Image 1 (spheres, helix red, strand yellow):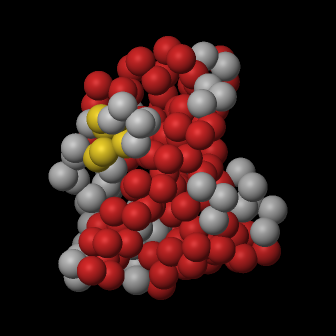
Image 2 (cartoon, one colour):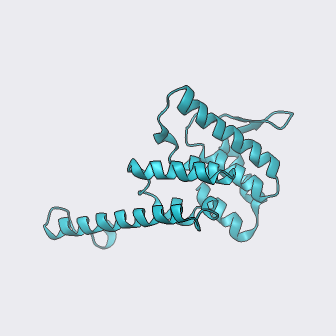
Image 3 (cartoon, one colour):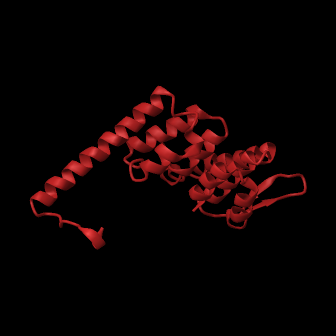
Length: 177
């Protein structure tokens, strides 16, 4: 949902409407000094990251950057200080890092995610369509990762076709896809 709203806001230029749609779900509160507080106990924080992205897109750059700093700080506290596995952060936090202008940190987390076998399930969104990665897409490391993911997916499709040909996996047609 958040990705679709973010992509729509970029297409239409209507970030204000997107912010209004996401803000109730982002679970972010702002104090009188403009400091954000995360009220979502989920490690994903996809709503808050989407809100930060849209704030920046809407010209509220300082507010969006403060929110990103809070999100990234929480991730670092939870992994380094509390021992939470990095697994919880493999999809959304590279987005936050990229949006925050930390391409090396975003790339490193994406590469670790791939190496751990976690980055291939949603490749079409996270590598191909995620707007936060627009600046990374020209980088050789990012292209190499995209190539690895595509190759992995092709290998998996070949294996599935082989298993279907052997009758070990049912053929799916029409309505059962």
